[in-house]
Image (cartoon, rainbow, N blue to C red; front, side):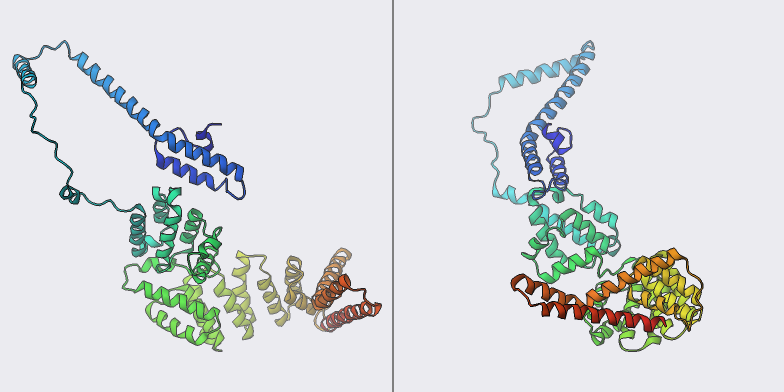
Length: 467
């Protein structure tokens, strides 16, 4: 296999093509995961870079020869044409002058002086030039949120230059520390090119832990704030950077359970721009924290109006409506969630509870049974499924033996998991001591007593719920 086969390109003297091919193959032959493959790739890359100047010279020679042949053919085609007397005389006179005029011994070629040097523009460092282009994209908000623009920008030769990748990454992240408001899709594009997620430990050597954690959250979407809502309002006079700072600070305050500080940021941001569904969701969470459910309900309704396809607004509003005993309205908000996520056990459990409160036990039982089948450790689904079997609330019909067997098996598994959850510490201590000491049978009896006691508590709890 030739070096070009290893790189996956045709033989070429263009070093930028060689660098790009090498960078792409690095994703396959990682130094730690495949050291042999990486060694072959690196040797192929080094050989290709050494051969590139000669391949380029051969290409130029070939091109020159082709051009020479074309010129000679043109000359031979016109050889039969007799030149005019004036042209012939002028040519002879020029030739005689070149032959008779001696070279001037006092003539010297002009030297390249400092003055001439200052007249030449200084070349811009490729990395500085790239960061300047990043800044141009960032400052134009319509380009900043366009993933296609970033895709073109990240296809520059400097990005594929392996030898300068570390310095380029450092320069880019230093810029992004103060210019971090980017959509998640853009952060993911940057991660694909620069491998932020894979190289987290290396990033911590050069950047603060808070900033590195911020990058990871943006890439994985754990604290994603969306940008699509701004597209129809790009021409409006909004201090977008200040607004995005307020929105991000408010999110951080809510995550750290500091609603008062979050409320101040949310109020200022809401006065600047109200058509942001993420802002409305945060306002709803803030009002729930301070005990104002009506204001929260209004904020979640606004979030649903602005972004009907997002389920978060429906989820929060359904819970508020359930707490207000508006069960039919809550079911109407749970249906869009289940249309998009049929296996959402939280939504199924809440919908089943709504039907229990409405006295429709058959529907409640079917929904809660579906939730329990999807996740038999979902505590709310299990508890309310038991309630639908309560003799005082539900006139139970004959149950199919296979269904009865499946229910018993699921119940038994649930009880075992709950007993282990209550007793795991006692079990762990017992086995650790058993490894190092010859325990008296009394300790074994104590462990058995704990397990029996926790099993009795589970059975008693089930009896209370079911009867």
